[in-house]
Length: 356
Ligand code: NAP
Ligand code: ZN
Image 1 (tube, helix red, strand yellow):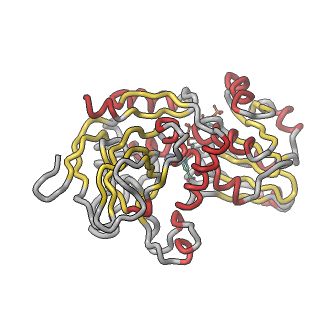
Image 2: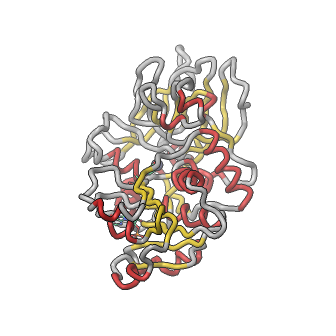
């Protein structure tokens, strides 16, 4: 497995162009630096951001690209100065593999908002030390600086733990930031990977949770996931009935859309947190904001908060609802994700890549 330069030739799946789909390719993982950890990946979740990036929806993809930032696996080797992890440990990597670790945001455990050139993404980024492209978890193994490798609590199954690394933390972080707890009224817009975690987490924090969805077929699921109510967003009367009701709308909708109907649902000082749409927003009449509504966004979470979220899920027995697929089914999984036909997160069993 190891070459003369101690690099690791690695089987992966990636895209070579916006319309190429995702197919087999080989990449090379760097030889271990003193502070690196080598991880044999067991599972990787499929985030809608993977699909956006593979297809260059955001216009900033550098090809070839190996997506995947919901990574779990076991430590296979460590660099000589690594102290946090040992061979055999169950570990995880989310959306970040590095940051400056010195700026005011990194100092405040908000590495995702690193002001020194931004944090280094798990894929579609450049390694801070040698400028090589970073590649994600649709691969047999990954090499990562030890601080960015998290621990998977013992009682979380590996496959189920994977989606927590993005869908989990992206929902958890805003709920914590805006102090959601017993008595809070939270609406979650879009019941997909992020949304279903938002429902489970907010319910576990003691909030009253309502799902806002286009899909009537998800009404029953919403209740099973822990929601107290379900509003079909095309039902104008039902939406109007909840005017001024919620403390927070966690908006996970992945496409450009009018956020005004969700602003109407907020109480004074209520907050709509956009975590889905990464696009220009259709115009919002500021008159509605004069009702002291807050419109904001939130990006994933820092390392400490991600570890905290993993412990919270372990403690409360919260795991995502997943469908495990072999690596070669990835393009079909993308099609189903686009059609909102996933309940509620695909996870790739990486053994299928090793065997394939
Ligand atoms: P997902 O599993 O595909 O779920 C998105 C849900 O949004 C769908 O299930 C659907 O729910 C609803 N939806 C889809 N298309 C819609 C449309 N055209 N109009 C209205 N609603 C629509 O996606 P995900 O993995 O949860 O990701 C959601 C978004 O968050 C993506 O854009 C992703 O890139 C982004 N993201 C952001 C961060 C961050 O740090 N901020 C992190 C991860 C992901 P219903 O059927 O219930 O309507
Ligand atoms: Zn993601």
